[in-house]
Image (cartoon, rainbow, N blue to C red; front, side, top):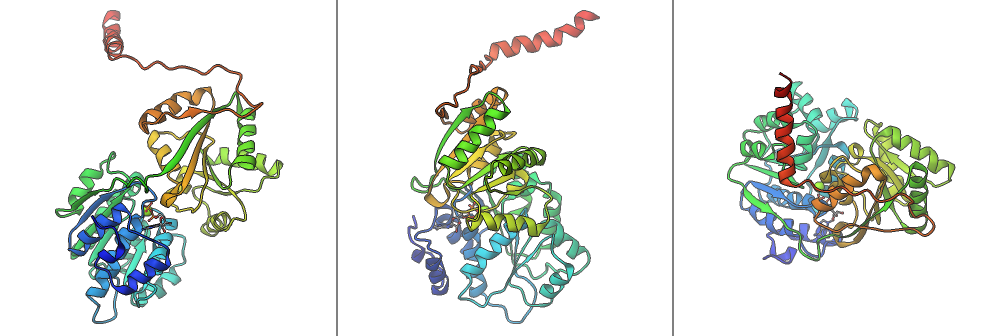
Length: 409
Ligand code: ADP
Ligand code: MG
């Protein structure tokens, strides 16, 4: 098992960039994916959020581009697809940081950018292009982007891309890149919504990497919940937590209406916060994230749509002000804390009607998520108990339901 970056076949210029970024040793997914990718294999990798998947494909790509240098100027040789523009920018930033001692050019092509800016990019030599599928497809259709030079196709957050309905566009792009040598697919999970069928068409005999994070990498997230009697109680609990317990928190909400309401409440209470939601102008979103990133504010309100795939460093608390719609989304949310070996906290504030989801989440993450109390803010209602139906009961009620209509006849 590879323990040091030096054991990987990487050029000294990459090793020194890695050192400057403060990476001490490769994460599991990096140790497994980098050698295979450099061997010319396709990659199918899944590893939890925050375990360094970006460098796991960026580093071998940068090495490859140096091992096989281009002979003349021209279009991109490595195409990285990401589900959102924020993620594209983050991946490009990390790629630029790792490529700082090389002459390689890295660009992004995403929505929310003027066409002219892209025209300038497309006229220069690009080595790596990080793109969102929709905008790139537009350029291909308009014959402004040519995939014939693409040698590596990388899909980042493939599960999210499928969730967001990019499946057909990605298939189409894969067709456009049919002269490529290698395909690398990275995902937080490979379960659900047809990731399997999807990967079968894209990858040729891929190296299967399912990187269980090592003990030290595994997230140390302390999870608990508070029960709230009603909306006011919930708000009071949140204010207490974000002002007295948490250093930096992301607060998740179900909808933008709910987000707007909470924003008003926090403003009234003079608690500074930034917020992101879906369909928000790019510059405002960037601005909000920047204010949170640089510590101008320590609270970020977010909806799930807006938060997809964004890497926000040093979050001490993830707070579920609204419970997510599924246990899987819960995992994605809490993945925002305890990044890269740090400790983190995940708090859910639940009302009686959320209890069932809370129980489901606990079963899903296979952890006993305990209830905690805040002095003088204890709930007064009794905790609802949901008995799991026994299999027999289910069968009985199913047959009952079937029989009923026949009785009427
Ligand atoms: P993922 O894509 O798996 O969610 P990222 O690639 O966004 O994770 O990495 C998460 C964080 O970990 C980033 O801030 C990144 O700079 C950092 N990181 C990546 N690789 C390492 C490493 N080998 N050692 C320490 N930190 C790392
Ligand atoms: Mg990632």
